[in-house]
Amino acid sequence: MSTKQMDFINGCLLAVGERDYMVGTIVNSPQRRAYKIFKDTFTSFTHECVWSFLNKVGGATSWSANVATVPQYQQMISVVVGERKLTPIFNTELVTLEQGDEGYVQYFCLQNNTTVSFYAKPSTADKAQIRFQYVEELLLPSYTANALIPFTDDFVNVMENLMQAKLCLQMLDDQGGYQAFIREYGIRLAKAIQKDQRITRNRPNMFRGGRR
Image 1 (cartoon, helix red, strand yellow):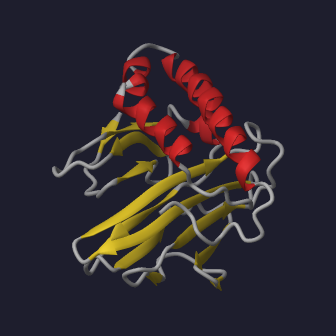
Image 2 (image 1 turned 135 degrees about the vertical axis):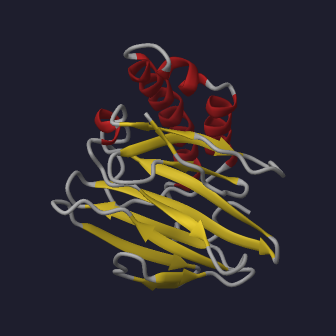
């Protein structure tokens, strides 16, 4: 196992680096925290998907989309802010969200049809919200690979409950325990999104609104 430290404000972050994966969350915490990144153990969970993360740079209204790349994989990235859509964006091109903007930063891994997207909404000069969303085709076959699901309270609660209970850390301490965590996480995640589907299925523009 290897460890890294990440500064993150009011949000969730999973996985950084080529084959280093992390499960952790910081929710409404005034203090900075460090989370362990579990190397290699989550390869089966992500199907070797290359994850990416948003890193705060240059003040609260500027966000950098950093892409961790593996040579044999190809990723296409699009950024949606309100009605503006920029695609594709490669590598470390800067993405700036002004105060009051909100949108999604979407990462599409062509290797396994997996989409990873972040919901970003700078709220004040010194505080911003970043939320994590993961769509896995095996868990949610009714969604296409590049679908974006609006981030709702139900989804956030599932994430926060799992992380705050430290189920992932407790299970990962046991040999093979991460598999149990994946099953539990997948079941709760699917139920939350299925509940949201009844509300959002017919929404004309899923990029508008988001979680306010």
